[in-house]
Length: 170
Length: 198
Image (cartoon, rainbow over the protein chains, first blue to last red):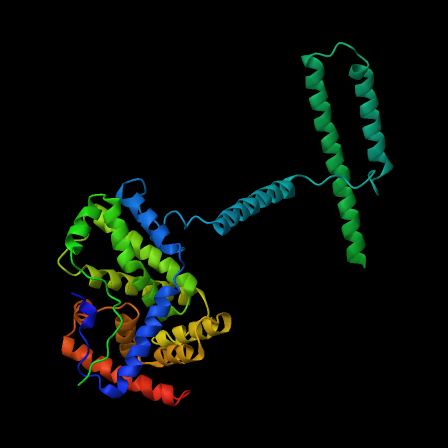
């Protein structure tokens, strides 16, 4: 028995042609379905029923779709977040490091320069020309470098103060 | 009163419980028979409601994945309402998807499904020439029906459901549905005679 034949007795003759047109429209819509869709549905369902597929396919982007939710744009989003984090870390480290002294001690007084020169010559004479590099030499080298850094900082501070005074005077 | 024959869209339901039982046991042939019986009807219903072939395809596929999963896991208990259940899943799935798309896209009147389908129908009309003007006019008119009227027309003529099954699905008295169907056709006639009105 075909259930669809339970005609609507309330439909008058004058509307039967319209009803038939609607049926024809329905037929056309069904016929317009992609030919391979039925086969794809059958195969997918068969694999679910046989247990080879978990049946988790849902409409793309819906919450019940754990596989498709992890999509390419989200990969990009994650990558962008990581890159931003790295840039922030590098920028923070860079800003915390002492700034390099400007050029060849521009504006520094000749007294500071001569102190540095004298210390370097002293160090060079004592250790660099010595071919016997050892732990003691490296310890002293480290000490000398600390001293140099201190002198640089002094010179840099003086220079900054000078520049500041110039700006204020403007 | 002479009754015009209506195309036999709905396949016989004989043997359906056995088919469902076999499919749920992993019988591939039984599953394929089930799919053959229903996939075009589900597609047509969804296509008519949303007016988009791509979405109809996706929703149809999703409905049958749900069906297979339920059969495998014992989540569906056959009580003679498989068809009503299947089309209800399709309607709900489409409704959810349209809601989701509305949240992500240009907002439209959320209470007016007809508006969305009408837009889809216009897009279809632009892209396809497979339907002639008469069918296009009919589609436009269906899209302009109030939601309840449109629903019964599409369930009846696109999904090819009997009034008995529609009554099961919508949980409404069959007499109410017959009257609504009649009313919907009268409105359609008016819309077809006065295009642009409504």
